[in-house]
Length: 197
Image 1 (cartoon, rainbow, N blue to C red):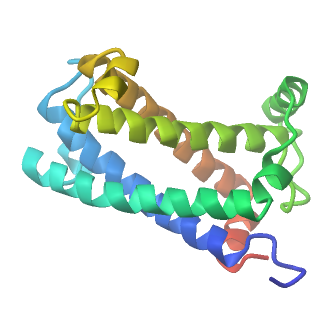
Image 2: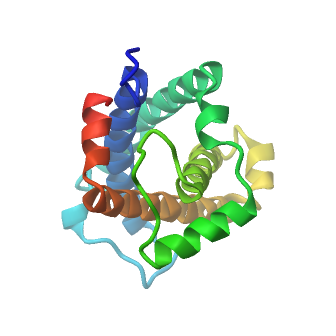
């Protein structure tokens, strides 16, 4: 890795694979949700779903699930093994989060050095890592409820596992939207994730 490289190749590759997998998982998940809504007032337009019908959506969801999980494992393994996890995301204190949150709300959060994450970024990335773990576990509890009775019980039963899965998906979508907005506000970060420097 050259001195000027801020985002190594493995980070960029796993980032873009994850972005694709999340979009496909969410779109197919919305089609699955529409077949048996948890909250009847929430329905997703067919124009933003994937699969065309329940069977097609399930095929997409299960196929892309393997890509998401494999990519996530590779990302976590490289992040921890390289020391990037502790170097980029730690330490983090509640005071840092509150300070940077107020700075962000006033439009005064600096993005001068893209090599260093501010407390809001660190917190967001830690939340999304935990969220993906919970999405996978709740998804297993829904998909293989009989095979994973302990997991189903930990989720509060099958119906609660569906709610946990839906809430975690909502957190992931919110992260994705904020992430895209931040890229629009700081376009250099997109170039960084494409070129690495």
